[in-house]
Length: 120
Image (cartoon, rainbow, N blue to C red; front, side, top):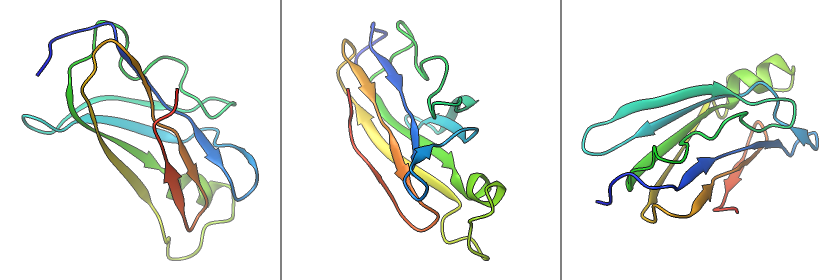
């Protein structure tokens, strides 16, 4: 595994059910290896983004990570979640190998579906 590098990690949440940013979504970042450990926790802002990078420059370590998006609570607060919840915490498990580049992992979601990709 590579050591610390200038790479960064960011995310944002889009509520595609209503066509708006996912404001106030709780997001956790976990490093999965060698043992699972929470790295940070934050809330998305009015643009559905985190104010600061989840991994700032210098904090990067290559490896397996997981973003946990608490969209069940978000959609419940908006009054459009099914009961019982179809999706509660969406976990996106991914790997980062390049310690120089920026990684962006967004979540596009509804109370019943989600998608993600590696953005820029």
